Length: 396
Image (cartoon, rainbow, N blue to C red; front, side):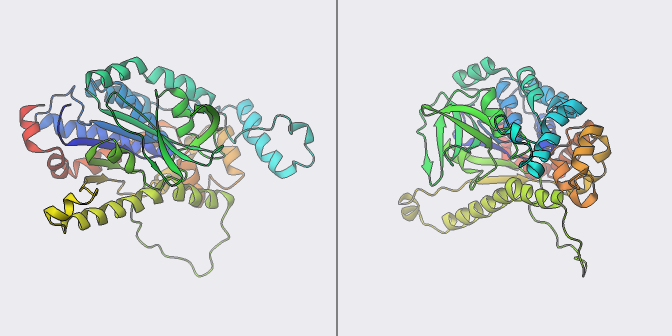
């Protein structure tokens, strides 16, 4: 892209909720095209993703040389999703993983024969491997980085083995790895195994092995222990970042009944998922806003003496509760999955938060895409200001 001020894209995690990101990016492409941006030109120098956002990020990066084509491929998948493209949703598949796993938790002392080969997760995500191979074009990603069309791609995962939070990044530029407390980066050739690891929702999908720094480690969802989701883009050189969330960053207070019912297992799990997927992003945005405010108060001499630099942000997140939308679509899940989730209360309205991460069904994903598109079109002026008018009028 060659611009001095590099633009980063942050796509957060959230399972099926990541469909919202597709709608946001569709609207960004539409706004830029109407303003004179060449449709094939990628507006992002640096693309970073976590969990399902890592899949969207990598799919987009693979076609950075043709942004319109990349969006078309991603949209085609999300607009025609069925759960069996991501995990085994048939009766046999659910029995082999979910029912067996729940039975082991309940009656493990009676089921000693499973100790040698216990079930690894609630659901079997083997079908996702086929989807990723169909969606991605990794040699094309290498070419985009070599030609300079894309500056860097980053995918984040969490090591169960070492207890570390690791960002794998691929770039042709000379960028040193960074290290912070309990989190660091590794320069790597990003592949399907990194995406399986980054999107392995804890307990729901199995951990994925990756050879990292000479050892085989097992990784799970990158949203776990992710204290600073925006930082990889900044370390890779971004000075402007578009952050796309998959949950409202500030929930209005709800009416709490005088005598609330005891929470179901699904309700507790959904609350935990929200903590993993949503809270760290909101906290990091607040932190970066405070840094920007501090930097704005420094004079040139003080600014030269610090490593702090201002980072312009455009944040787009859902204007509606995705839990509420999910509650309307739980019936579209395959019956074996509904039966499994119903056992822990996830098919009830108050347990719909958990179901929202697994609702890879087009009725749900298409509604999220429409919401993302509408939310972004309502921010048209902000989008144009973020991407800077001079570049738009030149179509570069």
